[in-house]
Image (tube, helix red, strand yellow):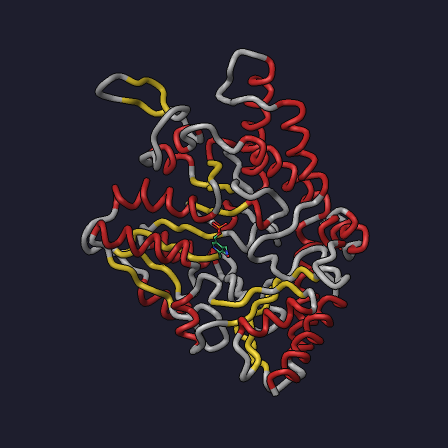
Length: 415
Ligand code: PMP
């Protein structure tokens, strides 16, 4: 580990790179942005990368003959290599498909692999903490193929019950699809152990990295996963772009998810053959500016250091858990500080999460109320909704204090 990675973040300097954090969101109040698990903010250099692309290079890709198209194609292809490297995939662009977001990565595999490979009696194993993007997708594919879904239970502390995982992952399991970090509980799941377990039974493993890739170093090869998806808009990148890692031989064998131009090798009236990965999965004109800017976001995060970002967030979440723990009327969900990623979901007794978020908004504190696209998990937790504060590299302890003050205001109002 480098010395640089030991140093705490210079948060004031970092905040200077995100002008939106200076925004007055009403009554002269500066936004306290604690909704990073939904979407992170975008630093100047990523916005500049988009801007530069449109000012200097804008052109369609797929290797047109003219200068601008050549340049755009090269930059877009290299962006794939950069994102492959960013998640530890040594195969470069042949293992990195650009998608719209994590949801599309899941759908791509569920349709491209699942529809072809799953049959009656096969099992897809998920967890009780899956995001709807995984749960609903596999549920619908299971209905269409006759496969069964099973769910690894979450224990009282918000951890996966690994004994239950041992019980339900077996010879009929064809896919284990699990979130790396829970967007509701903050739990960091033991992906390598699950991958070992799945592979012992000849199953594949899909990890949903939406809440992991932006915040910690990820190495898909160390994790041992077969597929791994993430979203650009949660990692300081633009909306409309995400990545899907897949082992090369699996992507090669899979059916395309969408058809059209740009993904073909030879087309005849009756038959078509496919281009190589990633083009095979990127039909039509892709999000070129977004892809190039996503590579800039990856550079940005690496320049700062993902270990440092992770440590900063863990420090913040520990502070937040301690502050929230001062009050008997606050229920916090998920594992203890020290074991969780930088987000915390909670409820204030007697106040609906939506009302709480609305009062927070009066204080310019941006959090998210609701089920966070994990309705079945909320059923398990015994509540319809929770309030979630989620942190990133630019957040401060003073902002956690602002959160706690706003909660106090809600408490007074509803007392
Ligand atoms: N999985 C998890 C764990 C998430 O937190 C999210 C976003 N909340 C998604 C998947 C879906 O991400 P997107 O909307 O970017 O597809």
